[in-house]
Length: 291
Figure 1 (cartoon, rainbow, N blue to C red):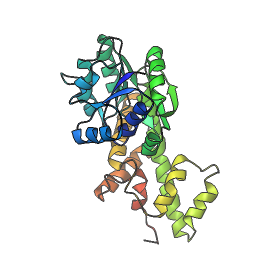
Figure 2: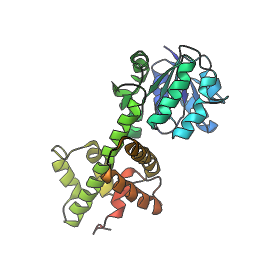
Figure 3: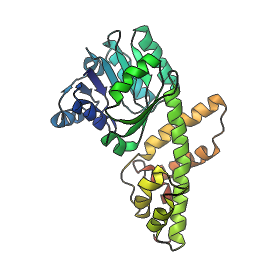
Figure 4: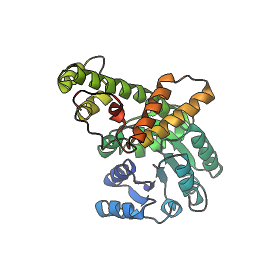
């Protein structure tokens, strides 16, 4: 068992830290909103720290799961960041969905202190985190990945080492690019089924096991038909992720016409007040004759 600092107790980090404590690791948590850390402590065995640096003191492993590149820098760098107190030979695992650039930047700073680094963004949503069934995409040195793998097993369904630092983040971008197109297609399918007078839920039960089936269809078709979006992966976060994808595409010469289009649709959802709606709320932009 290891001493682990877990930085960031959002909808993903909160249950991930819980899984680590449940298997017997010594977990010290930090969250920007201290009340959330105290709530976690009331439900789990561990400790809370007032700063990331204090949380990382004596830790074998530090895990981060925060919002974006700037949030990540704020908890890793500086006098109060985790690298201020991480010892040589320790390992930093970053579960934030961020840019490949920031992964490489932080890995270089960590390496100068003889601290290992693995970028390890996750997929599977809040339900995957709660149930310990996340898919984790990893970049970093083989020796660091092998070490991280043993820790991440507490909350992962699958883990894949994809190459050097940054490869995990690049793979997560592929994930988000694919999801964007899938959700738009599913939204159009739901609206079409309703407007055609079909029992939409029965339709997706019929086609879900066929070639059109996907995680999005299996987990979102029913709530979409019921016009329920107040849950899940927020539109704001999806737009943050797609911005990272589009910026990287400019750098590597990729064309992402569908991703650009869907991102513009999400901007319209935000304008409707749907910043915190689930990404399946793309359906809100389509006419339905049952509304």
